[in-house]
Image (cartoon, rainbow, N blue to C red; front, side, top):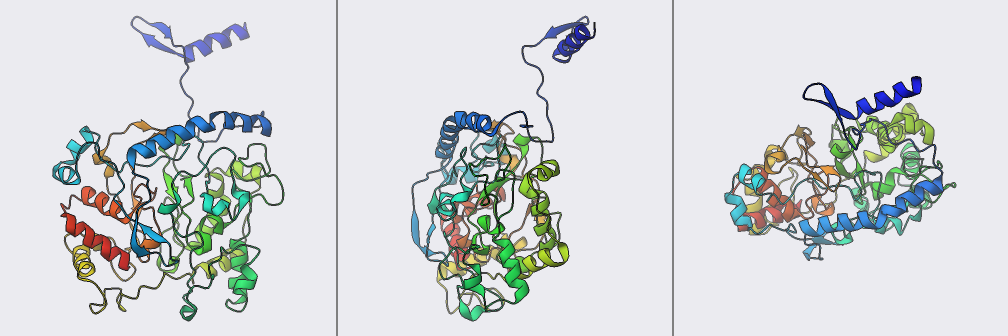
Amino acid sequence: MQKKRAVFLALVSAATLVGGGAFAVHAQSTKVISSYGPNNQDMTFDQIKAARLAVKAERARTHAALLASRYDLKEATGDARMSGGKAVPIGPTARLGGVTWEQLDKMTPEQIKEGALFPYPPLPFPDHAEGGMLFPKMTIDVLPRLTRFDLDFDLPEHVLPDKAPPIFLTTRPDLGDVSKGKVITLENYYATFNGLLNPKQLEGLRLLVTQFPQQQFNATEDRRTDRADGMIGVACFDCHVNGHTNRATHLVGDIRPQEFRHRINTPTLRGVNVQRLFGSQRAMKTVEDFTEFEQRAAYFDGDHTMAAKKGVNVLERGSQVHFMSEFMAILDFPPAPKLNIYGELDATKVTPSEMRGQSLFNGKARCSACHPAPYYTDNTMHNLKAERFYKQILVDGMMMAHDGPIKTFPLRGIKDSPPYLHDGRCLTLEDTVEYFNLIQQLHLAAQEKKDLAAFLLSL
């Protein structure tokens, strides 16, 4: 009797009440939405790996097709160089659906939305339903332990930062790049920094280059790496390479269900001493808060139950967290020789285009409303309401929904940090200018856009 009742209740749960009270049973039951990740404890590592590999190629093809439909991904660079010497990518790279930038500029947000013409909708993760930390090949080449068997990074290397970004210290600006062209790791940090840092800073750096278990990189059966040895785990500087960024990507931990989670690109740690908001929700007010939060929750997709299972590393606030933040606080922006002590252009050192760009930045383009000198951030958040320009539909496993309030990141040294916006949807500075020209409805002329990009390169 109990078994029959259970079967009946199961049918009712998968049915819809119609007309005169009868039930119409559907072939598929309603999807269960949970705040937690899938429970894989009834599957072995080999079974989980086989299931992931079975879908890897098809999902990679689907995502590659999406990128190719949105962007011209061929390498294009100009004369500008990042502070480490790599060529800065140029654009715009966005593909336009049968219209020109000039035609888009004349359209209303409603017209662009109705015609599905917005060039910069949210960017999905390579496998949005899966998510997790994902590293560029240039970083995996140095640190093979970061290889995932199920996913490969999706953006080409020419739109990423330097492989080994320079490190500039606020305490020793006379030294220039103290990394000397190396990726700083646990193997070389001491020889590189001994004598330059105080003992607390040196210990903080050691912790920043030490790997600890993480959601996809751990010893459990539902990891996404073949390794289950002493080399498992992720270090802070695996994403924030040399205190900067390699634009490793992840999904924010604070949004559910999965299709509404935002892709995030790793931000730079340069200049965190002048910032006041941290984390994807910007709910943390110090870099110490963020450092502790990363280990406790963000490393595990915001799921503290998984953190306990996979080996969360709880940092001691009074020493370890403090020491790590002491080092991060001395990571400086790269030199900007064309800026004066107020963070503005020195008129004796710049081109006419750069000077016109600064005037636009502070005037018609209204950039300085959120990015005031000298660090070009207002240390707050703004909702650009980009959803005015695109429909809320599911694309490649991600809902093209609202971005919500986004942190104002500093623009100092911005040429070192492609791709742009929180999810990397703007591959170049020119893409970023086009994005804000549409979002703010600025109606900039072609030359004004070039001048604005020239100014950004000088920062």
